[in-house]
Image 1 (tube, rainbow, N blue to C red):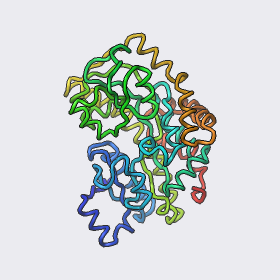
Image 2: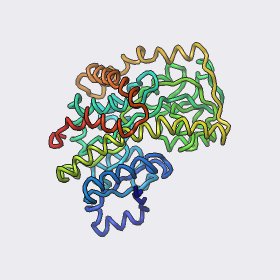
Image 3: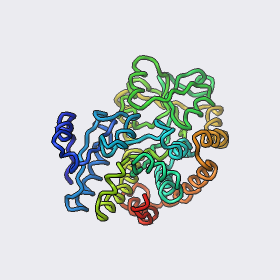
Image 4: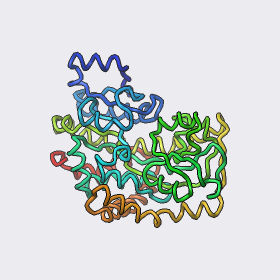
Amino acid sequence: MTLTKTLTLTSALTLLATGALAQTPIYGSWPPASDYLNTDTLPEAFAMMSEATGGALEWELIAGGQLADGRGTLAAVTDDLMQAGLQIPVYTPEAMPSFTLLYSVVVPGDDPMAVAAAAAETVFLHCPSCLQEARDNNVLPFGGFASASYRLMCTSPVSSLEQMSGLRIRATGGYGEMAIMGGGTPLSVTLTEAVGLLQRGGLDCLMATREWLQTYGYGEYARYVTDLPLGNSSPAVGFLMNRDLFMGLSADEQQAMMRASAFITAKHTIGNYVIRDQESFENQQEVNGVELVAPDAGLTAMVEGFSAHDRARLLEAGERLGVEDPAALIDTYLAAVERWRPISAELGNDVEAMTQRIWDEVFSQVDPSTL
């Protein structure tokens, strides 16, 4: 399988100047080039689309935030400055409130594949407001994935609520409320912004996945990982696509895009946030001396009771964002998670089988003309 080459900013500007961009859609990725999204998930998805369409649908990748950062990706795709990218809904909450509410739900436990599949089902089959928000922004929310359960990763050991109190913690979505509940001060900064804050002492901790210790270099500074899963969140939209481009594709090309969406959900969630999450943690234990910290009973009880505590905040946040019925959306999503848990347990880390299941259960039921 041939990997899609990464363009430089200079070559991208050349494409713009020559008009070749109209034939070669660009995915602008703000994570670093070494991120699993850029090295594995996207190249395989691009190759799938190319093969399925006989080379008619080819994508080019520009990594490292050369075209847009995390906060600017939605606007860049909306305006067709680039044709796809990675969107984290809470970075632009007013633009896509239903997505922001879904992403703000911290699902207890550590089953990212069930959470990712449930989010895809909810968005495309049970959330008309999600699809309307996408249309309003001229985008399509393909390739949603879930991260591994976040952990508390700090520059000094944190095992109790007393030690957590007063700390500055990088936390977004529902994790921000968890940080407040634990006595910390949440800072809603992007993954790349957090690196500089750690270097300058502007952050004490992160609520983040263990994989990011390696990919973003957090392990050089946040060397103490509290051994307590904080829960999963989804959907991070792995293939936010310009809607006008999609609607201009042939029926076969549209189907190839939707099949690739199912693949990205399975591949990135399993490959990066199940398998690589553990591998990266072990690497950082060896390379940077990252240590596990055992939580005490008080910190554990706070995390285990968080979901019940957080529902009132979620409902208030949904109403403030303008979501029509936030309770129904949350309950639909959580019910879908429970339906997908036994499927996730059955299929395990089989990306191909999970891709097919998401296609069967979700995208095969979607009429592209209604998106």
